[in-house]
Structures are given as structure tokens and as C-alpha cells.
Image 1 (cartoon, rainbow, N blue to C red):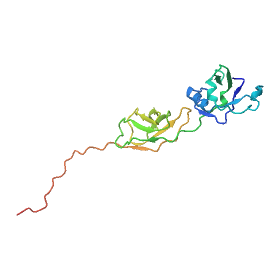
Image 2 (cartoon, helix red, strand yellow):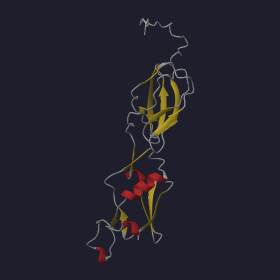
Image 3 (cartoon, rainbow, N blue to C red):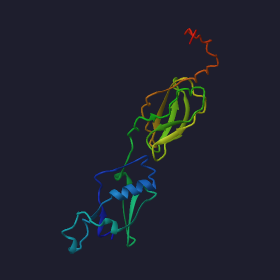
Image 4 (cartoon, rainbow, N blue to C red):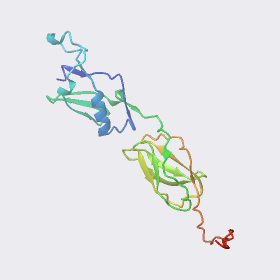
Length: 204
């Protein structure tokens, strides 16, 4: 089948974290976008009017899509034959920074504690928490739902707390809007002053 079909040059590349270390998930995305075309060099007269045209049922022809040690994308057809093209034609590095994260936890009264802080951020990104002076006070990873629970490594100082997210490609977001950490209020242990009954109750 490798004589009959070719891998078409893609019109849209797949964005990946590291083009030199394409993952199985990346390959699955490439396979989804992959197109086959009828070979332009095949001399089968029955295919004369199809040369260079897209193959409609490409999934029915492909057994697997893998990569080799030389940096090629390898398409194995169902008869065992293979076509190869450089992976660089199919992938591009992710250079877009994650969206600005959001600190969801109310830090009122939480200064001086190690209260876990929930942050909304790009799924899979590394989320770092910073105090008002820019010191990192904790980090965590956003799950598939875009939620990271960051447990501070030190007591949260009073003042603004911000978060930044860094994706697997190393792109870092702008800082989140600040959440203000305040000290717990001091319990009121003083009894009220002695009350005074103002109404004259004589004869009442």
C-alpha cells in the first residue's frame, strides 16, 4: 500500500510541548489530522485520475502511526508496508503562555497559616504561589479540570498573594490578580460595660 498511497503534507501542524520528544498523546493528535493521498509516482493506470488526490477512508488503510529514532513519522499500513516523513513537518512548539490563573481561596484571616490555596489554571501547568515580596511560598500541578491545590511551605505572610502558571513547554503566564491574606481577628474576651435601666419603673 505504500506504493499506492503517500502521506500528504499537512496544512496545519500539531502544537506540542517538545518537538524532539513527541508523546503518544501527540501522535494520536497527529493521526487525527493526518491525510493520505494517492501516490503521484504510481504507474497503475487505474489510479491515473486519482494521483495527488486525498484518500477518503484513510483510517481503513492505516494500522498505526508511530515515530522512529531518526525523527520520522512512520505510517504503517494494514499490509505491513510503511511510509515515512520528517516529524518536523507535522509538529510545532507551543509558544503560547497559559491564561492568567485565578486564586479561588479566600485568604481573609489566613495569614500566619499554611492553609491550602486552590488556584484555577491551565490543565497540566505548574502553579507557583508568591507572597507580597515575590517570594515563592508553594507550588502544585493543575489537574485535568484546571484546579491546583497548593499547600504553602511556609506560613502565609500578611499581604497580597499571587499565582503564576507555567505550561510543559516552559511558557509562563502573567501573575494572577492578588488575593489578600489578613491576620485572624483577635477574639473579644472583654465583658460589656454594666448596662443602665433608664426607665423609671415606679408604679409600673
